[in-house]
Amino acid sequence: MTGPSGNGPAGFGPPIDGPPVAGPLGGHGFSVPVLRLGDILLVTLQGELHDGMAEQLQQDITERIAHTRVTGVVIDISGVDVVDSFLGRVLAEIAAGAGLLAARTVLAGMRPAVAITLVELGLTLPGLRTALDVERAMEMLTAGEHRDGGSP
Image (tube, rainbow, N blue to C red; front, side, top):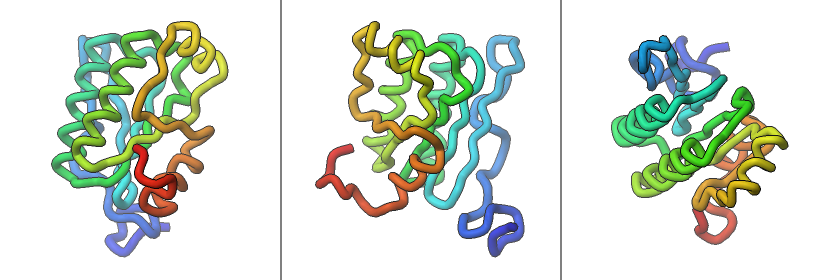
């Protein structure tokens, strides 16, 4: 079912214009699909993100937030097997940059092994809220403005 414009999901605005956020990087042909669902960007990470790709993704998402003025970002990492300290830091920086641009960020779909690795590395991902899956992340962002009293 499509929305009023005929090209986006029902109840949401049209999809984002242009190609996925991160195009081919580092000669690997890697791309990250990004969908705009109303006022939320849905970023789906799959496989392994190399350092240069992660940095490019951070820049591209921040620019997309500023350009589209979305109020939320969901980063789905259910397809990611490994989150190292660098990627963990980049995810936290994406959330910080989004916050400065008035958008909240939720990390969705973290696998238990990834959570354990982050704890072992001592990474806390400040400013980055988590949800078990994309559906719950979307609910967190659409359920009202900061039900918890204003924390990120």
